Amino acid sequence: MSDSIEKSFDQVAAFQKLWLDSFADMASIWSQFSPTSSPSDELRKMRGGMLKVLAETWDEYMRTPQFLQLMKASLSGMLDIKRMARDGLNRVHDQLENTSKQDVDDVLMAVRHVERRILDRLEGIEERVTNLDDRLETVDHRIARQETAIERLGQVVRTRAQKPAGTSRE
Amino acid sequence: MIRHLTFTDKMSSKTSPEKDTKTSDGVDWEAWQNSLLNETFANLMRLTSIPFLPDKMTHVRKGITPREIVYEEDRLKVYRYIGDAEPKFKTPLCFVFALVNRPYIVDLKEGRSIIAQLVKAGFDTYLIDWGIPTRAERFLTTDDYVNGYILNVVEHLRERTGSEKVNVMGYCMGGILATMFTAIHQDLVKNLIILATGIDFSTREGLINLWTDPRYFDVDKFVDTMGNIPAEFLQAAFLLIKPIDNLVDKNINLMENVHRDEFVDDFLYMETWLNDNTPVPGEVFREFAKYLFQQNLLVQNRMRLGRHMVDLRKITCPLLNLMARKDHLVPCSQSEPLNDLVSSTDKEKIIWPAGHIGLGVSSRAHKELWPRVTQWIGDRST
Image 1 (cartoon, one colour):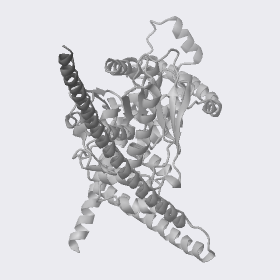
Image 2 (cartoon, chains in turn red, brown):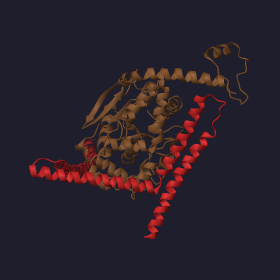
Image 3 (tube, chains in turn blue, orange):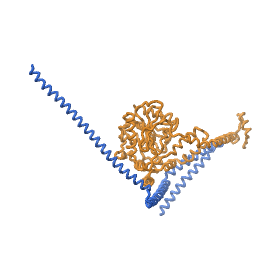
Image 4 (spheres, one colour):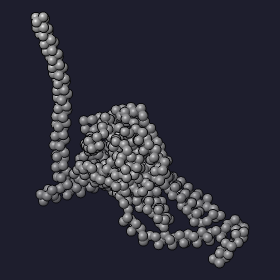
C-alpha cells in the first residue's frame, strides 16, 4: 500500500517537475526581451520561444508512462461505453425484430468467409490449371520431338527403300 | 526619459534621417512608434481580409492535372493523367496512395504537384484512388488490397500499355503496400519508388509507434468495437502528434498572414487536404497496428498476406527510398533500413530536409528533389 502511494507521489512529482520546468523556461524567454528592437518583432520572438518550449514539453509529456496510461484508460472507457450502448441497441433491435449493425456485420462476415473459400478454391484451380498447362506443354514438346523423330525415321526408311530400287534398275 | 513623438514629428524625422531618436537607455522610441503604426495598419488589412476567406475556400481544387478514369473496381478508381505530349516512356508508372487520406495531395496545385512533374517528364502516370470505404469494406484485409486490387490494377496497366512491367511509387502507407506488392510480385515491377514509408517499426522515435505499444493499446478490442476506424479518430491522432503546432501556431500564422494571398492559398489547399481523412477498413487497421507497429513482422520477413509471405529479400528491382528529415510521422530511422533488407543492387536513398508532407509539396522539393527523382526513374525506364 505504502509502495503504491509512494509511486503515485513520484508520478505526481515527475508531472509537476515537467510542467514547472516548462513554465520556468517560458518565463526565461521573457528575460531575453530587448527593448531596442521593435515591439512587434520582439513579441513575435517571445511568442515563438514560448510555443517552442510548450511544444517540447507536450511532446515529452506525451511520451511519459502517465500519459500513455491515461490514454489507455480513456480509450478503454470509451470503447466499453460504446460496446455497452451497442449491446443494448442490439437487444432492442432483436426484440423489435429489426436489423442491427451486428446483424449487418455478421452477414458481411459470412459473405466474406464464403468469398474467401471460393477465392481459395479458384486459386487452387488456377494453380492446377497452370500445372496442367505446364504438363501439357511438356507432353506437346515430347510429341513434337517424337513426330520429328518419326518423320526422320520415315525419311531414312524411304531413302533406304529407294536405294535398292535404283540399284536394281542399274 | 521617454520621448513622445507626434505623428507630425515622426513624419518630419523622415526628412532628417541624421536626427538621433534614441534615448539615453538605448531605446529607439521612434522605431517603436513606427512599428506600432505599421502593425496597426497590418491588423486593419488582416481584419478586412478575413471576410474573403470563405469565398477563397470554395475555390480550392482537389487535383489540377487533367485526368481520365481508366479502371474501376468496387470503390477503387484509377486515374490516368493527360500531359501536353505523348508519354516518352513505355513503362507506366502506378502511384499507390495511403488508405488514410485522399490522394490529391500528390496533385495539389500548380508548382506543388508530383503528378504534374511526372507527366511533364514523360511518364504515363496512373494514380490509385481507393475511394471512401463503407461498412461493406469492414472485413477487407491487406491481402485484398495488395494481392487483389493492386495486382488487378497492375495487370490492367500491363494489358493497356503492352509493357511487361510497371513502375510502382508509394507514399506513406501506400509505400508499405507498394513494398509488399513488389516483394510478392517482383516479376511485375520495374522500379520501386517509396516516399516517407515506414518499414522498421522497432524505433520509438515517432509518437504513433509509442501510442500503439501493446501495453497501452488493445488493437483487437478497438477494432472489434469500432469496425472501420473513423476518419475523426485518425485526424485527432495526427493533430495530437504536434498539438501546439497544429492547433495554436498554425492558426496564429494564418491570422498574421491572412492578408497575403499566396500564403492563404497554400494554407487553404493544405488544410482542405489535411481535414479530408477517410476511414480505414477495420481489418487493415488491425493488421497494420498488430503485425507492423506491434510485432514488426515486415522487417523479419514474417508478414503473411493471404497465402503469401512477404519476403523483402525477394525485391531485386531498382529501389529509390525518399525520406523526410523532419518527418514526425515516419521518422527516417523507420524507413532507412529497407535499403539493407532488399536484394536490389541498384538502390538509392535520399533524405530531404522537409516534413512528411513537405517532401511532396514544398516548393523547394519541386525545384530540386523531384527533377532528380524523375531523372532517376527515367534512367531506369524504357
